[in-house]
Image (cartoon, rainbow, N blue to C red; front, side):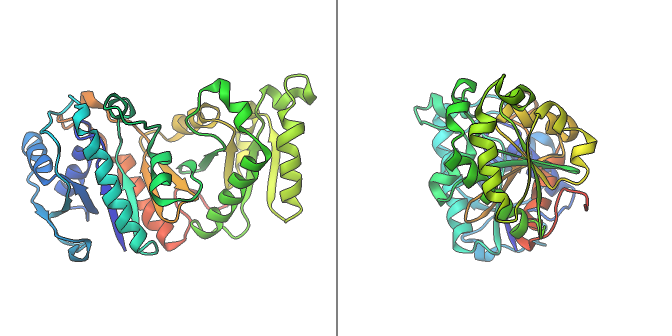
Length: 329
C-alpha cells in the first residue's frame, strides 16, 4: 500500500503538516513536491527531518525514517504566507504526477491532498474551481464530494456552485448518478453491505408540500422512489434543519445534502480539524484535509496536523475496503 501526498499551495501549511508528522517519527506517505521547499521549511520550523529524493515510486519504503519525495520543481522559490501565482503551474503539476502514479496501481495506491488556494491559481489565468473537479478531469469518472468525521458522513449533490445555480443543477439524472455512486462507494470503499442514506430536501421544510418549492416532489422524491425499487435504503427528502439530529443520524451511514453549505457547516462544527474530504466516483482513492491553506500559520509551527492524519488513515482504510471515520451502526 502506497499513500501519495501532494502538499498543495507551497506558501501554505501543506508542507508544514507533513514535516511535522515526519519529525514525530510517524510513518509518512510518498510526497510529490519540491525537495528544496521541504528542506527550507523544515529548517525554518526547526524540525530535524531528512528529505530524500526518489527517482520513482517503486523505490518508496513506508517504514524508512526519511521523508521520501518524488521531485517536482517550483517555478520560483516561495516564502511561507506569501503565495505567488507563478507557482500555480507547480501545484497542478504535483497533482498530475500523483494522479498518474495512482492510476497505474489504483488498488494499492491512494492520493491524499493538502490544501490548494483556488484564488491564487485563478490569478495565474488558469480556470480552476477546485481539487474535486480538477481530479475528475485528470482521472475521469463523476466526482462526488463527501466529508466525514467520527459519527457523520455528508456527501453533496452539487459542489462549488453559486447558490442561484443550485436548483437548476439538481436534475433527476444528476441526483440518480450521485446516489448510485454514493451507495456503491459506501459498499466497496467502506465495507458497508447495505448502506442507509438520508437525503435532504432542497428547500426549507423540504418544500412544505410544494408551498416553499416543488423540487422535492418533482425531482427528488421520484428519483428516491425509483432507486428504492432497486432495494437501496434511501430516506427522504427530509428537511435539512431537522435531519441533522441524533434521532435521524444514529442509524445513518451517510447524508446526501443538495448543496455545499447545506451539509458541510454541520459536519465541520462537529469535527473540524479531524474531518476528511473524500472524493467518491473516481477510479482511484482520494482523501484530503478539511481546511484551507492557513497562510497566516505557514512557517510558524502552529499548524494542527489532525485532519491530515485522519485523511491518511481514511485513505488506507478505503484501500482496504473497511469502515473508516464512522462508528459502527
